[in-house]
Length: 153
Image (cartoon, rainbow, N blue to C red):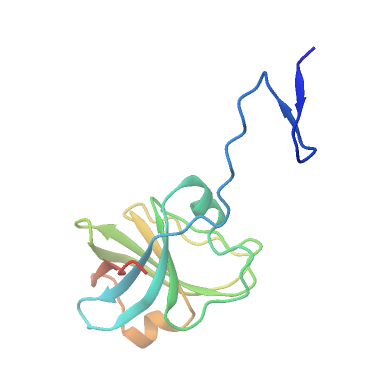
């Protein structure tokens, strides 16, 4: 039987186990600015980067929409699904050329909820943007995009 010590604030502390680590809630997601270098148009003023298992799996699930200038970059992604999504997206597949630059390999405008996007083998990451962003910026296959880190706040 384990020993238990009663603390002054009436909390019980087990002496035979190490304390549990505190959970990090609301972990900060790295933010970048996305720019189309061929047209000079900004695709997203502020896009989150989903680069780990949790953020990639979560994506934009649970959100009601994206404001103009927002987006999400999903690293190591060749295909997206829209199951359980509440709003459509423009999806841009990008092949990485360097740490910050890439080349557009496919543009999927207006991907509707409960659909499966195409599998793009030449894709290293995907940009998820509000509907109409790709057309408004003139983004096409072959264009170069740059991910610029935002200054820390």
